[in-house]
Length: 83
Image 1 (tube, rainbow, N blue to C red):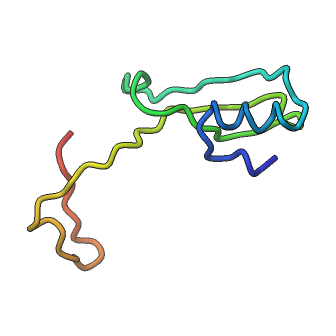
Image 2: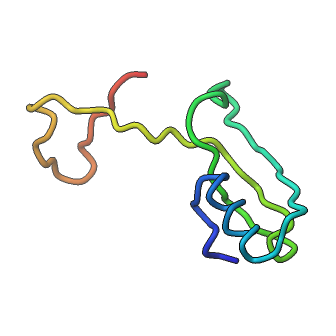
């Protein structure tokens, strides 16, 4: 069942249904900073032969960088964008 890890929840449920697993318990865990309403629910843990899935929300959209930020920098000198 490790093939379910990282999948969006709906894809994981479809895969389980095709395998004959229909009674699935879903445990949701959210980021502490209140960003739990954003992103795609993805499977992060599978237990009980797929009958229990743990999911977390992940933001899937990429944030484009400005041209000058696309330059490669040596390790340890990365600058982060403010959120």
